[in-house]
Amino acid sequence: MSTTKVYIIGVAPGGAGSLLPEARHRLQQADMVFAGRRLLALFPSLSGQKFVIKNNLEEVAQLIKDNLNQQRIVVLASGDPNFYGIASFLMRKLGKNLIEIIPNVSALQLAFARIKESWDDAVLASVHSRPIADIVDLVRSHHKIALFTDDKNSPDKIARLLQEQGIANCRTYICQDLGSEKEKIIATDLYSLKEMRCSPLNVMILIKDDASEKAHSRHHFGIPDEEFQRRGGGLITKMEVRAVSLAKMQLKEDSIVWDIGAGSGAVSIEAAFLARQGKVFAIEKDTEAVVVIKENIEKFGSHNITVIETLAPENLAMLPPPTSVFIGGSGGHLMAILQITANRLKDSGRIVINAATLETLQEAIKGLKANGFISEVTLVNVARSQAILHLTRLEALNPVFIISGWRAKEPPAK
Image (cartoon, rainbow, N blue to C red):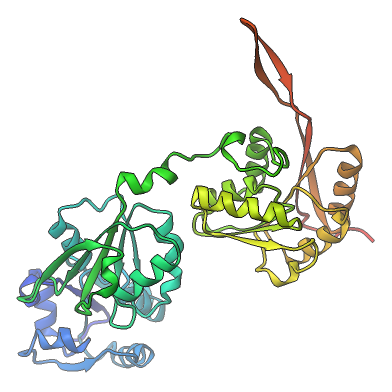
């Protein structure tokens, strides 16, 4: 009896005995079974025709399509096929209506159970057939991380990369050959792992304890000005102005930010916290200020910031297109900066400009309009309390105009 459904069945690390009754029934009745060699070897008595999945996913999808209404088809996958598994690929190729998924316990769940740690607060990722450089910022910005590795992107190679990128040493577990007779749990630390060789079937778990997290956990949105290293005691966007400016930038976790005229890097630092999975480019012409920015990056651990020493708009064309741009200083080149920024900014992006003078305000509005942007002006006029003997008075900060720009739906009139 044929069926139009393709059953994707998860196999737990325990092997054949882990299958639920429904999964076992579907597998026994299958005319065609697709799986990797390791999983196929777990079911030697299958009567259905076996097909090996390797680097041939397109071929597998086509073969399944060709036999949909003629054969009962099962695809075997490790653990939960929806978690870094084949399910998403086959759903794209075949359509969700043709797919039934029967999940199982994943190696990840079993790994956390073995080390007796909760995983509801863990960040999960894979370097299996993926660039390991992609995980650096992920590891940097989270305290508990679980990784699927492979024989090329092995734990020792990952450990070397993370140390080279300035990731602090932390507790690390390698849970290898889970569910088999060769199962082994290695409890070590990240730096010691560099010299170890592990089975290619493993889950790597990194846990940063409180001591290693202090530098990051004590910082939050709205960092006091005095927390930053500053050049000559000045050149910083004040906390209240910074907070409003960042809100106007509408940052997301994966935002790409240009901070032009970065000064001491305060806006870059806070933007980097908000865009943990993104990138921030701190653009500053002054060599002394660049040194200060780098000191602040080290202090706050904001390593998703790249410092560019240049006088904008020079070299802006070489940077990735931004989703948000902050202009704290223009060196007298605001119109040229806005032109290049407008051309490079992604469609839904935002430009935010700080202006302390009416002339810069006027130029910013004019420049945004000339490039087809709608503008909005917010005046931030802040006073802070100041003790005077046994009394308290308010001391005003310099007022700052915050100009926000976003693209108009229609092109500007000529």
